[in-house]
Length: 163
Image (cartoon, rainbow, N blue to C red):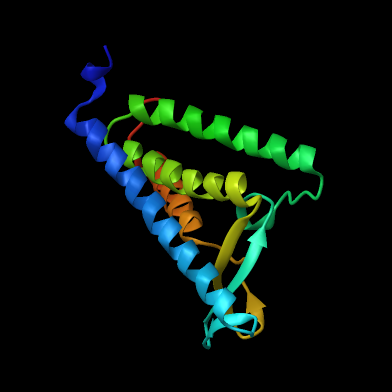
């Protein structure tokens, strides 16, 4: 029964998700390792980019951070359910929208892994212009954002008959 789902498309989708997950894990492990080796707060500093490790207990960009363990666990369960729903939607889609959804899933699984095993997500990419700093983020956040932007562009450019 399950063998009929093991198609070339399945392996391509799995490769997308696993590649994003592995790239995210490697980057986070490396930054955490480097952070433990140095004594200053910034791992790398330049005019527009800093690499600074911060632990995010909320969702995207530190929103909804909770110190309460019940709410943190509830949020983690909700995120896991959303990933599952997006996976079902992605498996029924075709074309680019499927790949954008799998980019979102790959990034979300990377961050979910950290929420479960570290009780926080390590963020470390800090873009800034002068003293204005954008939210600190990680590789998973990049793929989640690219997937969402891709889905928005597809929706805006698709030729719908009922516009």
